[in-house]
Length: 432
Ligand code: AMP
Ligand code: GLY
Image (cartoon, rainbow, N blue to C red; front, side):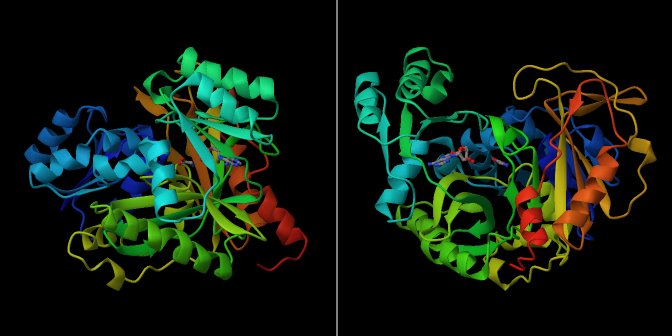
């Protein structure tokens, strides 16, 4: 069958690569794709943008696509799945109503409260004075979030009251995030270690995928501005069996049951961003209604099962009967980015070194790249994610950085410490 992957980042390269491996797949179309997907076997890029819902539907119809899988959140929030469903086509992802778990933080906080799911205490405001009064009554630091989609950049952790007040003015008065900031959520600062818990969901059925951890900030030591993610690894040592069970019992199961009870039916990847504290357990920081980027790249590098079969099983109610088989090794991905990211950056730099990589336990996923006649050039902030498999986090990191060191372009940068928390645990002899 033909499969359509919507998107053009590293996550979509990994999805397309994995789908192409299935014996069920005749061809994978990627809209719009990147230079990496352009070069994958059985895979073809189609120049249709992710916000062109009509163009995507026309493509799916004319190519007789039998399964569409949506990578990024914007087309989900815009109702791409609703649109495909009305036309009788299988599209794996939540409809717009369910995608509000990502597209509105106020919706999510109210949902979590209504269903008694652990999360930070909060207030939600569209009025500046009310938000200011609330912030002044809260302990510092305080977390301020634009309500809508802001590409992972709409969150400020304010250490001081003037900083908090200035952030509120930026969002509510100066419209720093446009419509996404017409409301703000102000919440309690949670301490602990973060992990990503990603599952495949079909209404009330859930299959958890391998746990992972990403590094959201630009600079080493988890400092600097937030980005879409600078690297990730799987499994996450912080996700012990005990924490996993608590997350399923107190977060994932009540979330899908809550969606169902509220008259919705969630189908798709569901990503819970968690803060895990040794004493108080896991709490929800956010939901994403899609697979993570860059988590997808290392997680799919470990997936041995057929992802096409897994996606299809969500359409016939057999999700929970499908076995999911994982490579027991660790996978770790290092993102290489354009200088200036997450702010402004140059595009069009020629990438060199890609052709010199010969390591069967390493895969280079492309994100912001495109073909320029014979060359591969940069075309985005996050450019590549180099993923390596090895027996532990330290070795997987060494292997990935060996490849990273061979690739270059003018202005390239990457964090040198991806996986450092897990590596510290390994060095301390912690065997979790
Ligand atoms: P979000 O987009 O809501 O996941 O927030 C982005 C990042 O901000 C998270 O990955 C955390 O590192 C941080 N963050 C968000 N909410 C909180 C919170 N309540 N307490 C501490 N850190 C937070
Ligand atoms: N890696 C974070 C995200 O996909 O939102």
